[in-house]
Amino acid sequence: MSGEFELVLKKAVELNPLFIIHRGDTVYTGKKEYLEHFVKVVEKIASNIPMFVCVGNHDELYLDESNLENFRATIGKAHWVIDIPVFNFRCIALNNVISPKNKIYGFTDRELNYLEQQLEDAPRNTVVAMHAQPNIGRWSNLEGFPVTTPQSQEFFDLIQEHRVKKVLVSHVHAYDEQFIRKNRNGTFTFGRGTDFVLSGGAGAPLDFEQPLILNNYNFTEFFVSRYNILGPLLWKDFGRPRRNCL
Amino acid sequence: MNLTLHERSEKLLKQRIKQLNPIHLTLFLWATAEVTDQTIIVSR
Image 1 (cartoon, rainbow over the protein chains, first blue to last red):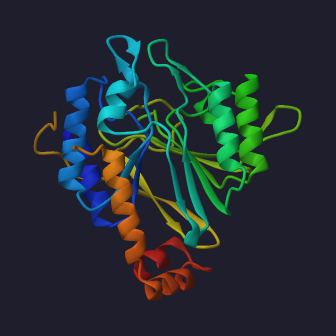
Image 2 (tube, one colour):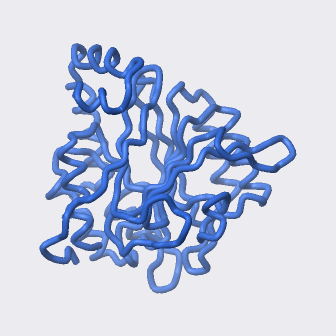
């Protein structure tokens, strides 16, 4: 965590959102004292704003092993759902980090079964939040999940069949957005389909790979009404931190 | 007993949803019906 995170969080709190979704990598390694420090900073700056966190590879990586015990003890459940019927809104958090040590991302059969259950009676404004982005289009060369595996193909089928409005990802320390549609033959079309929003620069050093749209610290804001979700509205340029956070 | 961040957030969210002002909600819905992002910011 760096001083930039505090600046980003302070700006987000100023907007007084109903809640904040953090899509993972709260710390560099999932050591309990680091995670406790993250929670302490969040509770100090965002004391009145609920925050829900997806599991990132760095949160799970501790002593070179996959370990979610510390995450669960400090941040909480790795799977959560926010349901707000008055807005026809549901946010489903997934864990798509398969092996943080070996940098493998994607969906286990168990994860897909869970997603299918949560999508069964999905309301009009359903979004999915998870850490890693698909290796596709402008993100082909970044470290994400391959889209050709049967599990990934099923993931796209599920979100399309249930008309998921947005898929929110992070992992890469930058901002970008792609509309992605999976075709019946397994190929993909860009510029239409599901809105994938990548917003991952909120503290750690930025990524400068081309051709990402924006290499800057950022977060995104969404406006949810009963009928639709508007956004992302991109926020950036938060100034320079006076000190390092940790 | 110390709550996890998610437990604390769940309690907070339930409180905040209860406190949502129905009048503001109506205005918000009206404002977001067919306008641009820029207008939405102003309307807030």
